[in-house]
Length: 84
Image (cartoon, rainbow, N blue to C red):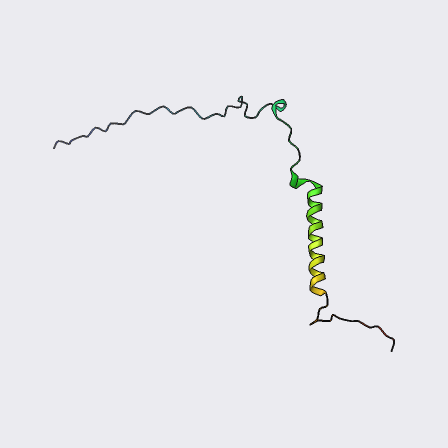
């Protein structure tokens, strides 16, 4: 009996690419002397939030004043304190 041998061919190994390395030498930001100074954002300033708080307080006071004021249908509430 004669046996047939198959010869397997193994492909040659490919060389691996070099590992990725970050290039830390590049400048990604401009130098500090090149950055122009920017003022504070308007929504971070104290005066803006003071105006917002004042407007909220005025709106609340106006709403309560209108809702709790007496009118023709609702004469309001009277509290009388007397001694027994």
